[in-house]
Amino acid sequence: MKLTALALALVSAAALTATTPARPDRTRPACCAPRDAAPTSVVAARTAPAAPVLPCSAPVSQAAAEPKEEPLPPAPKSDPKSVHIEAPNLKGVVMEVRPDKTRRVMVATEVCLREGPLEVFLCKKGTKEHEAILRADVDAQKLHELLLLTGAEAGKPTQFIDAKTEMPAYKPATGTKVKVSVHYTKDGKPHTHAAQEWVWDLKKKAPMPHGWVFAGSMIITDPENGKKFYGANSGDIISISNFPFSMLEIPVEISKDEAQLTYEAKTEKIPAIGSKVWLILEPAPAS
Image (cartoon, rainbow, N blue to C red; front, side):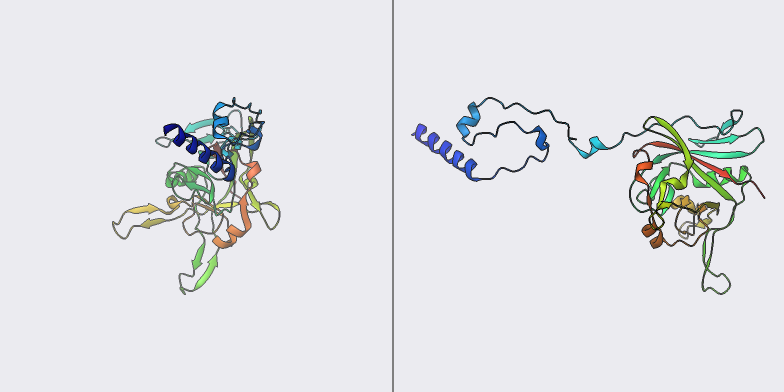
């Protein structure tokens, strides 16, 4: 009886294997499949020798095809005789003082987005990573203070309402013009260029043409506890679209919706997610 039951079980299993279509192997590319198809008989499958496996050149997973993140290169100098001063109690922030006493600020940042629409260029870590290329674990108010030390003058962010009439009225952001650059390593080579080269204008098929001004954000008072809060720490440290709390902003009317439809990350120019980048803020000389 036991032998009869076993024989019936083997026949049933073989019939099920022959009539049920095999599910595709989702974990291994076709090039890695055995040379010969496996026999449908359960008994034969148990006794047949293992089939050889073809060499596989296709990526096993999408992660394997992603570019490797790049480390932070040494902080650059615009003049060999420049002096680097690390900001006290502010990790990853350096001020460069040139021989002619002009200054610029450099911030260690991280790539958090390489593809998709943009509203922000630099956000504070843990805020707007889904719409910004770079993020930094830094207090934006401290950056504001360092920009003042470079000689930059803070203006005002975009205004949407006329304070006198309380009617809608657009006023562009004001403040000292600030040149924004990035310094990083990609494919083992150092690169330094304007931040705009990472922001692609879909309509003009060219890098974003606009520059930034030191709008200076604003101090907000929390109505619940009365504490003061620097607005750009909500995420808008360097904005692309118009926000009322931006530290650096474009002095051109660009709504949030328009930014999403117009500007996207230039993927092939940007190093891998997680790569470290020096963001350089250089105020324009006073006229």
